[in-house]
Length: 241
Image 1 (tube, helix red, strand yellow):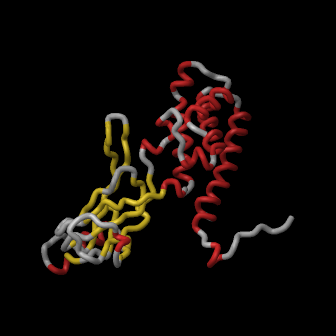
Image 2 (tube, rainbow, N blue to C red):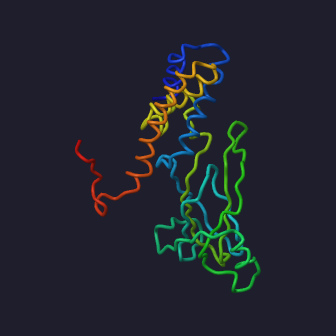
Image 3 (spheres, rainbow, N blue to C red):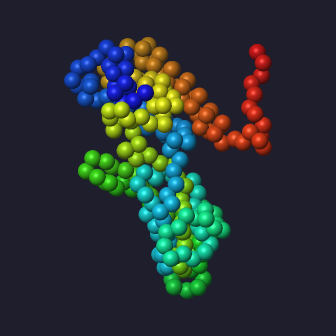
């Protein structure tokens, strides 16, 4: 389902094409997308920032726009002259620590005890940055410890979403969610739309029930099936009825 089809379906289900209603369709869709995004860890929102390299004596690094939570961070153990993929050589996965721990253990002095190949990382800040006049995206910064003593390739895997990842970009745009579970997106938007219309409570409850059932199935996919390995854990089976 693309944006045009979704927008049309919302108007058809609600039998409403008034100007104020149509002007808020993007808000209905965004609210549904965000509820799904915050409820389910979907593979469609797993990303990697492979553009980072450390700088000697620099402890903090701003990640690319859209980062909501850091899943893992790793550095290449070999000094490089520029950006290189971490996976091309020996890597070291960094352990996540509290920001205060890194400040105390590696306070930023030039002494040898505070510098070296990083072993730890901590989220140091979360903010919103305007990538363009029309898009506002979340971003994060991390602090490394020990503070890098040279240039190392750095890769950060994260869970994130930018404004451009929404189907509301318009037209024939599709997203992982709108292709994989279009009914979840539709019923989530209908809950918002019918609430906007101050519709009958039983109709809102019906739409919400359909949305929550779809959300549960999506959660099973994103946090169950996607995180298991058939070879080592076996195929999931259902008891016979």
